[in-house]
Amino acid sequence: MGLSFTERRRTICVLGWPTDVISIDPKLDDDSCPDYHRNGNSRHHDPRPSLVHTLLVWVPGNPGQHDWYNSDFMDVLSGLGHGYAVRSVSHAGHGLLENGNRDHGCGDINSIIDVEDYCNFRGNSDGTSGVSPLIPWTVEGQVLHKIAYVDSLLSSIAEENRQHQSQSKSHHKNQDQRNCEFVPDLKFIMIGHSFGCHVIQRMCVLRPDILERISGFLFLMPYIRTKPSFLMDQRKLDFGGSHSELLIAISTNLSRTLRFFPDSIFRSVIRKGLDGGGGEDKSVTNIIAKLLRNPVYPRNFFELGTEELRDIPNEIDVAGLRLLSSYRPSLSQNTEENDCQHQRPRNQQQRRPIFILCAGDNDQWCPSFHGEEIKAFQSANLLPPSIKTTKIPGLRHDYVCQNRPLRSRVNDWIISKIFEMNNSIASRTDATDGTETRNSVDERFDVYNPRATQTILPSKL
Image (tube, rainbow, N blue to C red; front, side, top):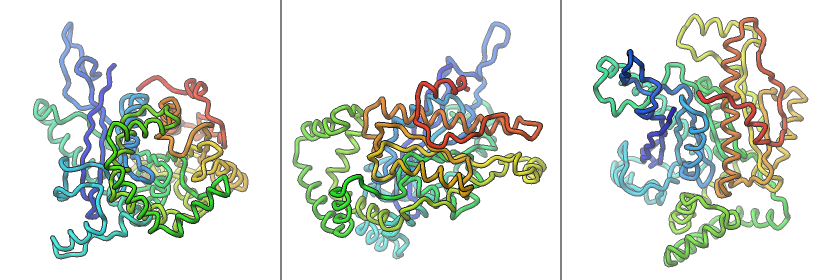
């Protein structure tokens, strides 16, 4: 059974700011489509689109582009099989697309922009002050930006389903546009990396209605505190945080200088610098080359980065994690079934799982002792056992710049946890005696073993 994907990249306006988004949906091959049905010795094609039962919503860290993860999207979807799709969004003002592929009134403005000039441009063009640098340059601004994105995503999914329903009355109309369809009780799984994990958590705290739509969370090296391993690194960090304007000026001048370097030499240096020369991903090389040679970008990066250092608490948000892992209501469209779900005893309901991946011991942005802290909170009954942590030795916080084998281990971990999440939901639904059919013992702080993972993966859907 073959599986291919339809990828769409574009720039839209969210809260008035150019924002890169990507959607990846399954597209069934004609030769392997499971919707072919036999009729005697012949086959006929049922033009129904591929059904999507789980949507993965991916939020990046800083520097804030979804482009870092594009190859990971494909790897994860290929490993999961049929029924899954991906949506991802870049941070406001931090995208990479230039010209073309625009939507929702952004005109010809590039998605990586001079924030102050853009504010002046929008103010002069429409006579309003509807855009603010607080959106791209602050933590809370980016949180509000993702809330607006999720709202628009939910609206677009509802509209797509209405279109599919109307098109289904005429099977042979617009077949090429009907690649996938979302089931009514679509499950959402939020995936975040670094700063993106904090954005997801704050979004769900501020919007309980969004939280109710989510089945679980995967947090990759969540940025909680900054704790450099060496004193010199701490001093550098302190200096940069205290002299952000100097840091921005130096980086801006460096970006202007790098534009004069021959492209081939510049890219060769980048490739050699990626994981000691082992970083073979061409897309990552292209992203780094674009960012380092764009004199506008350093201010966007450091304005948001220093806000992260100032605004994000240097401790685990126990209250936030408790809320995210709270008992989830049924997403069934059947009202009577929903009422029964809410009336069930708590031991027959299910908490939202939160899977946290930690990198090596030298990760100063997500220190590995977070796992031990979570374990201590769970022992004191301050956090539920549905929060599970895993550590992959050798992994860095910027794992997207590491070699393909290490990135594949992260993707394998994501695949295994999504299967575990969905199988847990299914087993809970199938249980008729009020008891769980799966072992819910928390792995606490296991060291990831890819060979062990292979033993728990079910056959492809």
